[in-house]
Image (cartoon, rainbow, N blue to C red; front, side):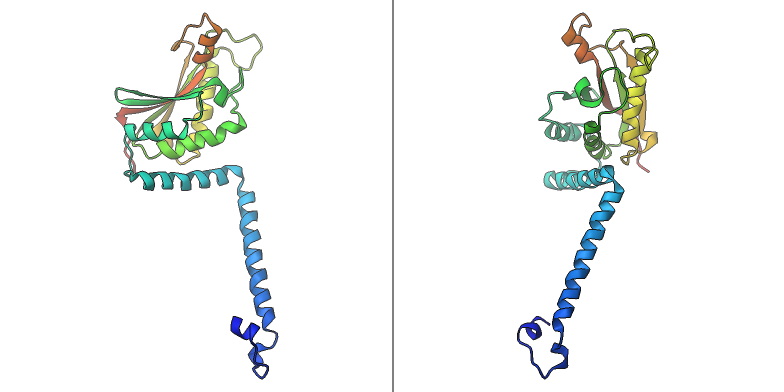
Length: 221
C-alpha cells in the first residue's frame, strides 16, 4: 500500500485517493487509544494501581525465579526489598511466622480508623505479595494506653484497634485475598512493643501488624 502511496501509478485505480486509507487507519488507531484511556479512567485509580502492581509482581517473581506459592522466608525478602525506603514499615521473622508492622504515620491519622489515601497503594502492594502465600493472614490492631476522649467515635482503644484492623482487612479482601484466609484481631493497648511512659514509646505502640502464620496453613482452592 505504501509503495502505491509514494510511487503511484496513475493508471492504477487503486492508487487514486490512497491517502484516505492511511488517514482512516490513523484515525481508527487514535480512537482505540482514547477508548482504552477512557476505560482506565472509568475503572478508577484502584483498578489501575492493582493492574500495575500485578504486572510488577510478575516481573519480580520471574526475575527471582520464585515458585508460585512462596514460603515465608521468600516473602520476607520480597517485602524488605519493596518497603526498604520506608522507616515506618518493618518486617520481622519469627518462629513459624512473618510479621509486617506499619507505624502510625503510614495508615491512619491520629484517633481515626479511616485509611490515609496514600496508604492504599502500600496495602495493595502488600496484598500482591502475600496472596501467593498459603498461610493464614491475621491483621492485628494495636494502640497506646492513652484513654479515648469522651465523645469520640470509639468507646475505647479496643474498638479503635479493631476498626483499624478491619479497615486493612477490607482492602486486602478486595485485592484478591480470599476472605477465608484472613482474620482481624484487636489488641488495644495490651500488646505494647515499647514503654507507654514516653512519647516515643507510645508512638511505636500505635501500629497495625499483618502476621502470616505458618502453623495455620491455608489451602488454596
